[in-house]
Picture 1 (cartoon, rainbow, N blue to C red):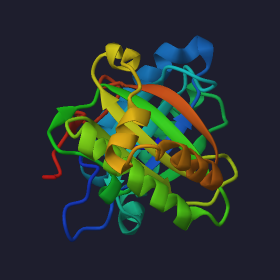
Picture 2: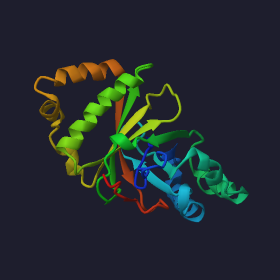
Picture 3: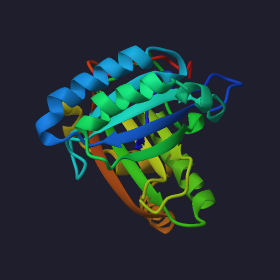
Length: 250
């Protein structure tokens, strides 16, 4: 979530007193000779059946890694209680999906469900989705509580040293052995952001004390197995959402 599923927040952050937002992400691979028909079918389907509400769709194109060229079809924000209504589109909806989307893609799909972590995300200003840097973690079994302590420290660093940057944190709602337990999503406009110097080690010690970074690395290693990174691009032409992210008033 991918994010994914995010993954992925514009109305993503729940308001005070409301449950954390849920996103259903479907990763789809178009057939190489049918990409044009696939994109046309996705765009038309979303605008006809997913124009608003909990069924609204954001589409992302994966620009790096082993999933390059695939698409993420992301529904939300929603909640488990709303999923029945959101998915009850009737026979015509299913026929349209099968004829104009699924028929132009390979049969294998991956569906994941992601819940936003409001307390570790930063949506302090309005912005429009464009580019996403996906950092996905495989958390070690029975180490979830210890990992949350590590995440607290990371959040404090970025909230202190780079509070104007926008990011979202999401956890997979279902157990898996695919290394998809948590995702940290950075939102950025220009690719030049990717070339900026990594200042996290320095920032960490400025926030948590001189000489503290090696200890952090040990804690991180003790609670996680591996990480995966991808770059995603928001496809406004294929989405029914407008990609506008609202400030959470942080």
